[in-house]
Amino acid sequence: MSTARRASRQAALQVLYALDVGHGGVPGGAPDEVFEGVAAHFELPEGARAFAKQLVTGVSQQRESIDALIAEHATNWRVARMAAVDRNVLRMAVYEMREGATPRTVAIDEAVELARRFGSERSSAFVNGVLDAVARSLDAREPAGPRREPSRRSSRGSAPTPSWEEP
Image (cartoon, rainbow, N blue to C red; front, side, top):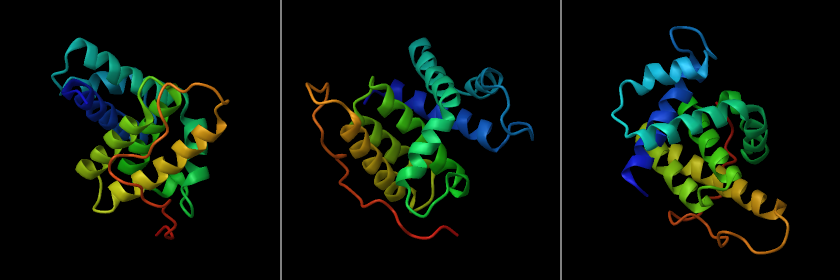
């Protein structure tokens, strides 16, 4: 995956995190305002900046339906109780998988890398398990016919959907 796209995802994750937990002490600030504040700290080429903004805008606009899909596949975990980094990595990857511009396997691999880099020791396995379940669900919901991408699991291997109890 391109370095510019990875940088876009990192910037978008930080914006989504700020929107989620509060930017300047106010959770749920205006996405454009928070994006500009956070993106100012990144040197992103214009195309990468546009992709980061697309991710933030798309996740913000579709947050309810994205969270519902995550909740459906994160056994024994409420979205609100997930670690903020994990929750926002999942949101961004689910948005990318549903929009179809990014192959699902790439979205999963990139999300696992973000979780590994910014999350806890268990984040990457948790994210991989939930996203694998979401991807299988999305595959099952699509009508039969030619697919843009062959159905396959993440190159990182498949983890079962996490079912440990939340703290």
